[in-house]
Image (cartoon, rainbow, N blue to C red; front, side, top):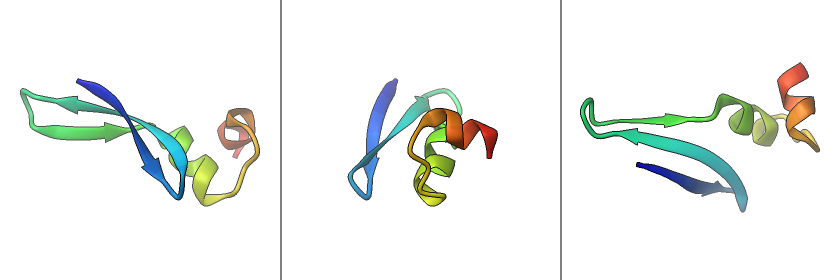
Amino acid sequence: MSSIKLFESKKVRSHYDTEKEIWYFSIIDVVEILTNQLTHQGARNY
């Protein structure tokens, strides 16, 4: 199951593994939010 979560009104891509019962989050989305990057590419270069 995949979904979009909001953090400080910004989108974070996520996926829930029902077998392992674990959520996975896009680290690029998290880095983008925490470092105030303007684009995904800026977060990827970080």
